[in-house]
Image (tube, rainbow, N blue to C red; front, side, top):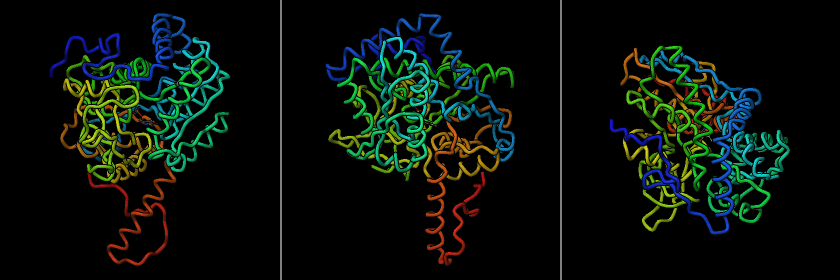
Length: 429
Ligand SMILES: *Cc1c(COP(=O)(O)O)cnc(C)c1O
């Protein structure tokens, strides 16, 4: 494997990861971007910043998270020894709070009094609303109307935490439109407001900043696996929306040539235009929402519609560092379809007693599919980026719909209307 010597030297000072990244924003946002970049530059060299952040990550967020050996799943799949990095056990239920906590401390250093954020699945909105409450900030969350419907539990949580949730109805009414609205707000209120961006995406310094705030995931996992297995893992697997949980796990292992890494994108209903969000399957180079990266666009350069059962992976572009890591061959990218994800959700729930977020389940589905290609003495770490409570209604509906379709197809008259049909249970691995 070719690992360039400067792998830990990206991005450069302009925020470039090879040909990707950079700063593509309107002139009016440049002062805010520069302010953030300079403040982060100071903060990362300030021991007090790290000390306070570490303390809050422990006492407020619940770090370190366990590295859990999934013994029963390992037995069933008859492949490698499977470990789950339990980011689902963090406060508010996903990895997002690592980043939100770091950025609210930066916002306070910059003298801001208000934070805004976009959210897809709602987990970043909840994490932002929580840290905003904790530090006494005004908080506005932009969320696509479609996402508000499919993640209504998280909307209620944000409101109880004192945040204002603004429904975005433009376009596809999902994450991309929510980011547009947040950027618009930021331009207008740049003096008082910090834009607490939720993934390793957007204009520099965000992709680097968000990565740095999540690398604690991989740093912990590295120490934990060395302690539990007395060796490094053979494979890391993580789902990729913007790419923050994946880069958080991968980054501290990038120099370990023996550690293979796979990022799993949303295959949706299959790899056809409008039916998926697997940018590396059919995407191309382009610029979207502040950065140059791999994205889904048609021949005229228009951004394509996307689909995924998981709101958190339903986005047309991927973080620039992932585009770079793919180019240099350090990380491979694959995808999991909605159907495979639903099977994997039931499999993990029933085998290990853990309800995973639909996003995280993409990584589990990948391993279920590929476990037999590995040896039983090999070791895999899956990043379990979040818990599935937010998804249970949607999953129940999906399974009910699929079950009634199945009945219609086989001409079995509809019987008892169980919303969690056992017929849709565990796949043969
Ligand atoms: C938001 C989210 C994701 C996707 O975002 P990344 O930045 O790619 O990590 C994945 N899992 C969960 C649980 C999320 O909430």
